[in-house]
Image (cartoon, rainbow, N blue to C red):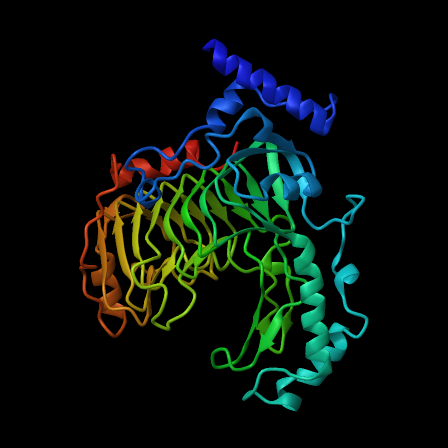
Amino acid sequence: MPVRSLAVAAAATLTLAGLAGAAHPAFSPADLRYARQAVPANDGWASTGAGTTGGSKADAAHVTVAHNRAELVAAVAGDTPKIVFVSGAIDLSVDADNHHRDCASYADPAYRLDDFLAAYDPAVWGRTAKPSGPLEDARARSAANQGLTVKVNVGSNTTIVGINHAHLSHGSLLLAGVSNVIVRNIQFSDAADCFPAWDPTDGDTGNWNSLYDLVSLTGATNVWIDHNTFNDGDNPDSDQPLLFGRPYQVHDGASDIIKASDLVTVSWNAYSNHDKTMLIGSTDTVGVDLGKLRVTVHHNKFDNVLQRAPRVRFGQVDVYDNYYIATSPDYQYSLGVGVQSAIYAQNNYFKLGQTPAGNVIHYWKGTAITATGTLVEPAKPVDLVAAYNAAHDPDLIPDAGWTPTARTHVEPAWAVPALVSLLGGSH
């Protein structure tokens, strides 16, 4: 390593020793080299525009290690170029002494779930209006209490990298109105909402809706989400009860990209056993999302996620070389074709079990999708749009109207399962 690089690494190590104490292991020179990587050229939409360098230009004073929530919150704030190593397991739902906070600790004194269920039972409240009144206000205050703790706001020009089997649980990384952010090599799990909102007008039978994504992009530009792992940990949706006849949904997205976010690459991640996985665009209303929401999704493993892999509105979204395992009896769909969406899906591999190929695509008021080079186990070529059109109405046009260019190499679909399973996710 050049002398200057060694000096930078040594200075950073000294800085960390002062921050975290000599008893904590510091990062290695190899860790620092990894953390200084920018998104490679032609690696999807995040490599376009101004490019995505994160905190690669951080000086030694802005290279830190976070071992707990307080250190993480302080380290990722602000727009100065910075590298933040997440070391080991960090619980984001903790008090000032780093002790875990459960749902009861966030509850407003006037809130009890049993009282809420009695007041807003559709047989009592009806299905034509959302809950209102003192109990709903108490639920909202409870949710606000939780949000103050479990949401971690990330500043611009930031690289967040996991070391020592990094694991962020019970909270959400929020990238709101920022640019130039890289998140790599972290396991994210169980951003459970303690106080889901009941909406009897959502769908035909109502739904419970939760607030927190594991990683949430809202109005964020030039972001690279790479080599991470996303799941519900030891709190799967299957363990939640049915309330008002609907699943009590405590988890929202794994990595949602909404509200005019743009120029994002989501690569080499492992998603498993999650419901609402990746929403790109949050509303059907034409507005700030037009010309935005340009996202590349490549070399990810979607292992029994139930829907939204991804669901898209408005954006030009390139989805290639992903491995989908869709054998759960609760599987709904993978590719959601929403309003004015333009999905270009190429060389993806699906293990469907008993799921019909026509269910891979779902109609959400969109009109077109390109899907080429698809293989369905055992390596059988399938025209996903034709399969969808044969089983559903209205028909979709098999041409999204654009061709991605920000790519270096597209693997043949037959190679994807082994490649993604071996090299994807956090380590």
